[in-house]
Image (tube, rainbow, N blue to C red):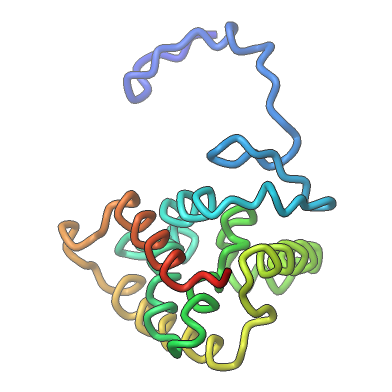
Length: 181
């Protein structure tokens, strides 16, 4: 089968018929993660930063682009000094599980189960508090309201939208600044 003239994408798809697609999550760095048997050695901060910097908030339905990574940085900045890491890592499970809209997430008990398993493993690996402290929940709520107004219902100039690579780099910079050894 030939695809032609779709975004300059003429490809003979027959040559890909034998490509094996893993049944596990495969991260940017190539780690394969089984949510039923999470290996902490497979949880790599660079994979998290890469994914969150590219993952859209509000299931891509905002008037302005905003990534989960940018949201994480906002929560980090709004968090008390001693909980900056918790603010930054607040939504890290979404690097594999995606940013599911709250109305849908509430209907998916299996999603919530796997989110809890993954967040527990991430918290143990990266030494942050989970479940999140009340002050982080408060910071997250304040940030969501700000982002709803600034990005969901209003359009910011495209020149003000940070590149994913910048968000990734700042996320990693903040992680290394606040990580607990």
